[in-house]
Amino acid sequence: EINADLAKVFPALETAAEAMDNLTMADLQESRSMVRPPHGLALALAAVCTALGVERSLRVPLGDGPPAPAATAEGGGGGDARAAVAATAAALAEPDPWAFEACMEFWPAARKLLGGAGLVHQMRSFDRDSLTTAVVEQLRPLETHPLFEPLVARRISLTAEAMVLWTRSLLAYYDVMQDVAPKKERFRELMSELEAQEKHLAKSRQRLLRLRLESEDSSKVTAMAPQASQISAALRAA
Image (cartoon, rainbow, N blue to C red; front, side, top):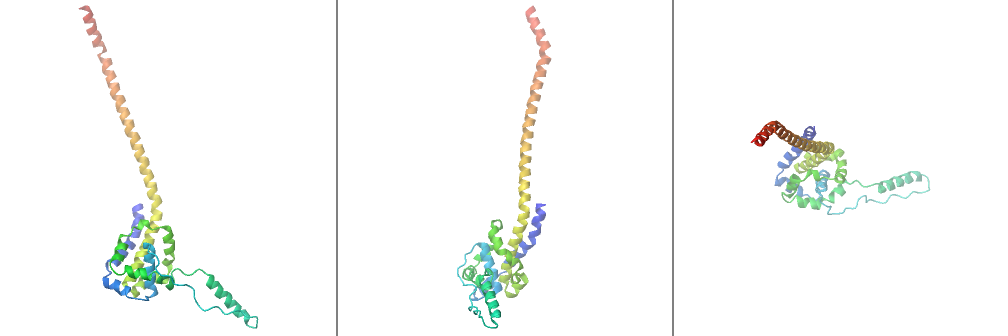
């Protein structure tokens, strides 16, 4: 059952690995050369940086824009007031963590990683079991993000596609392991119980063997008793 669960995620892992294998230094350098990349590429690299634990290296103010028009008490002010309320609500709303400006906060660090084979090496050697729930919760919204689809990313670049496939494979692996973990724990418990029962059975067998040997020795002594009596009587007669 555990193997069947793990088999569900193998296609995603293999597809991601193949996409990384197909990346060339030219692909990476092409992406690295962009000062202001397309949102899809910045998004893909920001996701990878988040998974790898790479810190943002730039802070871009979010939600900046012209001030909302003030409401007036004159006729038509109701529309202005509604616009002001809407603008205030938008300003108070939580900024989109995967908006272009937010993704660009990772771009300087991402460009450094793209400077050599270091990024692909880190992705290949990444310990998927080390992925924390907190990081998964950060990445989870990307599963439904329109720019985070492999086909969409491929239209941007092979680098973007590989980053998207890799990140999605991490999320798929995490989800499967959430199902597998309790089963593995139960399997370990059963194996521990079986080991304890086998040890108990081995001790019982040893005790039974010892009793059998003692019984055989006692039987031999009982069988030799008449012969011993005869010898003793003969010695007394002599």
